[in-house]
Image (cartoon, rainbow, N blue to C red):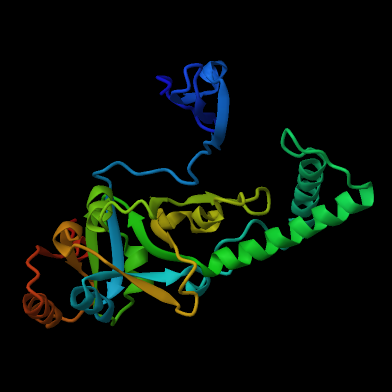
Length: 295
């Protein structure tokens, strides 16, 4: 095993040393291999991971909270049903030609330059047709991936957001906000490597593209106030459903429950009675928006 820490986009080589023993090395020590068996290319994550104690909020109406308690599961909405037409987008339609031209050239070069040990005997016309086929497949894959991706979306902040209260629990809606943190969310989902949890990056789609593998963690810059951290599941078996329920440890997930500032006075008693029914004991707090100023 190579002692060097692999940097982003480095290559890891697995194979056999001069004495036939298995060896796993980085580019720096590749000359120690007598025979290479496989190469693994390390790519950067499509997202940044918050600090373990970074506060995360999820605003919801009362019915969704009851579902969480009843099923002991987080709801993950299918990406093409979250209401944002740019979800999973690579760019704006006016820049489509630039995108297509880039990947068409990329595929042409890939077809003309196969891996060592292989040769390309295709004519220019055949190379062009193959590159166009691959570009078409890329488009199809993007749409298919959108239907295979499921999201649980959270807001990263140390304080409440009045804007998000009004967006997700508008008056006279009876709603709550769950407060947790990154580590609690991750652990409550079982530290599952199949669930990617990270910050969304906001870009100006008029001037930039989302990459092929990171589009699910890119959104329009105009939504940057959301400061979204999302948990993403890729599931290729259940596309007929618009959402997934993923089991979650409520004792780990729930740090605090905050009552919407727009609810009626009777709601707190109903909320606590419901939590007691499902044997959930966690602090219930009043929204800081209910505090009174002095002048």
